[in-house]
Image (cartoon, rainbow, N blue to C red):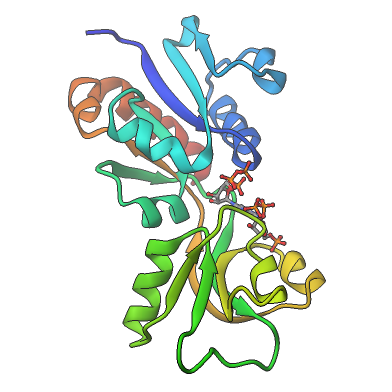
Length: 208
Ligand SMILES: Nc1ncnc2c1ncn2[C@@H]1O[C@H](COP(=O)(O)OP(=O)(O)OP(=O)(O)O)[C@@H](O)[C@H]1O
Ligand SMILES: O=P(O)(O)OC[C@H]1O[C@H](OP(=O)(O)OP(=O)(O)O)[C@H](O)[C@@H]1O
């Protein structure tokens, strides 16, 4: 069995914060990390191998075992419901999911429509509210939907509120807080327990 630990890292906004956490935890990551287009980066002296993925795909790589552990937003874990264990709240990339729309508007009585990048989360949320809605799946720039008459509401990530404000939208309901989480493949957790426990311990010391 290889003693290499493969970590699925999310490209984009979380990446830098996650690399900072690993360096604070004492993992010596090379400068190439900071500006590389490589999708696989080996750090032999640390026994680590990083795969750089789309944030929404991290849990998929971990579930299939091609990565032992990964760093994924709680929004992704709620949306995807992958067969992975969540080991640690890394307390980075704070944001939250919210229902938003044009001000002073109600949802369409007959066929209310909600645009979102998170169809499963949105459908479950409105079902719990006793509301039957039509979900429209989008992959980005979700705030456009109410502005062009595509939907009555959106379910999307909010952080500072700037995107909503600059597009003339208001938040109607705050749904769930989101941070990035350390996740693990259930089999890896058993066969590489020593290395994974060490990773969790060192990261826990940094984020506590
Ligand atoms: N405005 C934000 N502030 C803080 N964290 C955010 C924000 N937007 C998203 N996130 C978090 O960062 C993760 C990645 O978000 P991002 O929008 O970069 O992913 P993506 O849309 O898949 O990537 P891309 O925009 O390159 O297609 C999300 O899963 C969420 O946890
Ligand atoms: O409250 P704010 O600080 O304005 O942040 C919220 C925005 O951040 C994300 O956009 P991003 O451009 O990262 O991703 P997207 O391509 O999914 O819109 C999210 O989709 C919101 O649009």
